Image 1 (cartoon, helix red, strand yellow):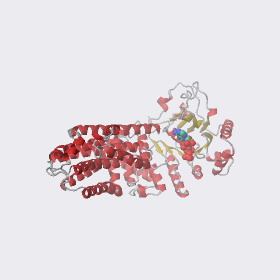
Image 2: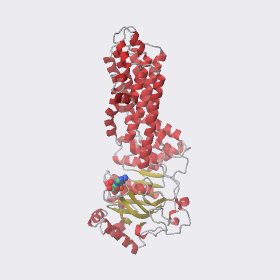
Image 3: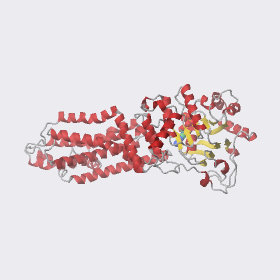
Image 4: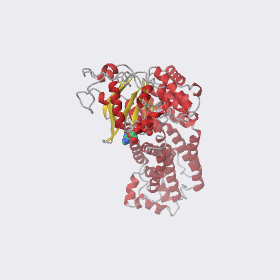
Length: 589
Ligand SMILES: Nc1ncnc2c1ncn2[C@@H]1O[C@H](COP(=O)(O)OP(=O)(O)OP(=O)(O)O)[C@@H](O)[C@H]1O
């Protein structure tokens, strides 16, 4: 099945252009994968995959082995279409879905397994697939992976082996024609690894072409073929496990690793080429044909042939799933709802009632109350958003590859957390108003204060989502928290009014969403009138230092805050798009 590059028939067009000689008759068989003189060069100079060609037949189970860093994952991702080859072409013949299980878990841990599978099925199966078919797909995936009795168990409670099988089950839902797995047996005990390999064997026997990387020699004996990658990305061998032992002259697959370091890469690449040249019976060779037929038309897979679930439906499913995850994670929910309550209690302990008394106001306390309300809304929004994306990057990338769009994904995060923000913002204002820490205006005034606070929280959540998309792991997002919060305290104009700030500080204040929220709250609360006409001697000088800060109607500030939220969301979308493109996360078309 493997063809050393040197033996590939040369086409009229030189590599790196798409080869002109293609294996039309062989590749036309549905389920056959043909890699024609592929290689991978990164950063324009570092070759991590040396030119190789191979054919994998439908229904074969193939292992890619080799030392750490040899390029196994790179080869797997290139064959799957997640990463484009620098030269050559990969063809997967026949329509149907494509499954890819990366090394990381690609399922949410907080939900029961059955539910995870049902959401995945609704997102991945074509639009219009009914509930009965969804149930059938879930049931069949659970049965093949021997997970039927674990259906109601939370994924986080599954053992490592069960979790790995659960990730595979998610990918099986769409009944892929090609299935790629990156080290599916890593970290598993020998018995669990063997059970997993038997499951993969069953999947391959059902007609699916399965290619996996492995560091576990016993896995190889259950495979039809093995590809041995030498350090530096060269193909040192390809053929059956028995022939591999014979080629490397070792009694067991483990010995191959020792043999690989006894000679350099070029030795093995040359030996494999020589050995194959004299024994053409050993390996299938893509048939050299003329280029009369354009291969794209007949050989390229039509993986996204069926009608995908539309963006609105995707948004709806992702929102419901995000809410489901939140509800199932009681501790997170407790923290999310409990921290605003704790902060509210602190406000009540700190601020005396009556700061907004029209006759005897307490001007500086009223300014501080308004600032801390604005900052509270900002903080809730930011912290809710900050861990939403970076904690599930592997899931995001995998689902992106399966066709989930980025807009529905980002907006689902916003939609799922919006009810919580409404709840905590309303609670904050209602309690402060009820305990005489806000002006006793009419309902319209309270509604306007709420509008400002909610908008400020949503804007902060958008900022949190942007930061979450930008970092590469959750630890970095947590470290960003002070950096995002401090300026929203210092440059808002509450502790030092904007008109008396240094010039750079004043510029900085323009990009603080909290400044506009604070000023809108001050306008709605009527602080100008309160400070100028109240009995407090502090009112007039305080107002003088703020100048016309609170004169603008609230809707002007709303427009500014809303604009910032849009900028944050668009930036978040852009970053995720770029990251997905760099990861090759686009659906294969
Ligand atoms: N985008 C990239 N830029 C630079 N180097 C890269 C890139 N992708 C992979 N590499 C390098 O290519 C080599 C092969 O990486 P790969 O992950 O494919 O190896 P592997 O055989 O799967 O390793 P392991 O068995 O440890 O998982 C490594 O040295 C890796 O650092």
